Amino acid sequence: MVETRSLVGAIEAADAMLKAANVKIMDFQIVGSGLVSVTVAGEVAAVTAAVETAKLRAGAVAEVISANVIPRPHDEVDKVFHVDGGERIW
Image (cartoon, rainbow, N blue to C red; front, side, top):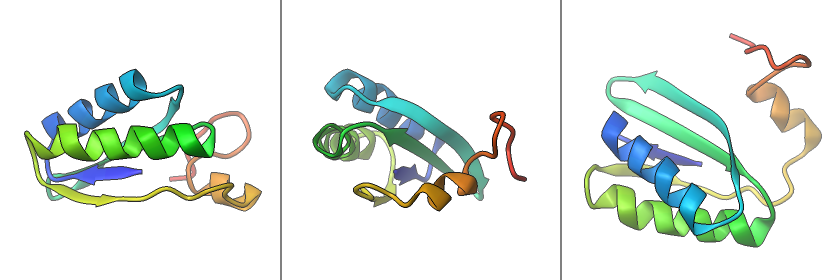
């Protein structure tokens, strides 16, 4: 996950992550107050490389608020993003 204080920064982060490693975007959310988050999934090493690259690239154009990798998240964590059928919870 990478959170920035700008839409442009989040788009830059998403582009960097997809180009840096074999990951897929799982969530892209405008949080509010200028904050935007991008969540990717893949193998732990790929996600780690993607997030590190995104921090550098997004940091060049926007403030990076946070970046985090959750290795092997519990199945219930997926409910934070989607329910069965791909519908948003909120």
